[in-house]
Image (cartoon, rainbow, N blue to C red):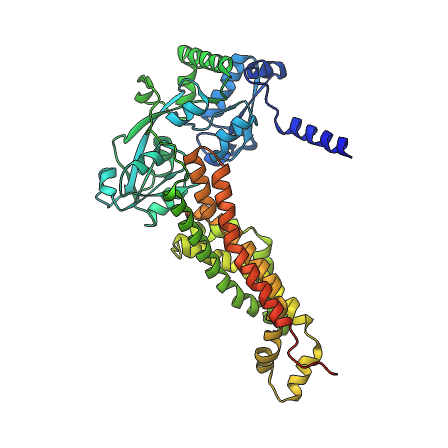
Length: 488
């Protein structure tokens, strides 16, 4: 048994990390005839995206550059899909050979991994609403400015005192919020700004470059031979004009590409888990608790109404209740949050916290409805018959007899649902709410490690959920106690 268990662990370890030993990555690439590169399709056009004419094929200027590098190495290139914010960590794990996806050269990354020579020079572009008077970042003190996490733009915003940086996951969402008045400006690379912000007549891109930087290819420490080979390929592509042709094809070539650039970026100081970070974690935990409690306060009464409608309502009410339940149970809560915050923004402009509370509340109301429906059906038929014999009407029976007993029966699953809701609140980070899990990911970047922030996050989630579980256990014990005297 022990040998079999150890064998399984060994096989899992072998399958979980397909990278070659340190310093042997280039040899492994040539041996298997393929170089794998990590990227995130969510970054969209013009980086890496699905061909509209053939969705099974990936296109983009980075696809073309990597294919050209692969040809210089005598191999083929294969993109591996990973979340953008985890690309560097996944590279270090050995999940792929290199990372190439708008990876900016920063001091932190130069210390952590090897970076190639640049293949593109970008500029940080500040975008504001067309009628606003802002001319620079320094005019935005006390204002909300959107950007992406783990970028030079984010580091710049954090270095300017008084600016409230709003972190997004996608390229289009910051400009959408700016147009709707949910933020006051957006600072992102000119590639992104040109395609999502500057083309919007309601927005205005300021004409000067806030800063400049370079896109590079990342490799693991120790892969010096691979770095030399990739740098050589990029040098040949510049010499022959192939790199310029690729950038011109994507309409990215400009005068910046003719200027010699070195690694730039704001120096990001590595933090420790100090008292300030602890307070940030506590504040994020408070946001998590606030959203969860408010959402559950919405879910409980709405769920009870849906349950009563399904059990005792007329046919149309039963149909409406079931459609609601199946709709919200059958679609991901993440999708529902996107629809509420972005999809309906043209009709109702909800704030991030409002959309989070409403989205989670509406979603969990469907689950609560099924819990209460089961509890109502579990009450013996004699209870309602006895209430009618006492002269109670249908609503009096529901209010005084059925619902109180159903709530007592439903208490254990209700507690479980609240704990689940507490954890599902981590999804609201996609609509810019910095709750506990999002704070953990930000801290992990600041500390360049996941262990301590992960332990702190888990401890706070446990601290939030355990008291509720204990309270529910005590209530169950109290409600289950038979108050009548025993017959002798």
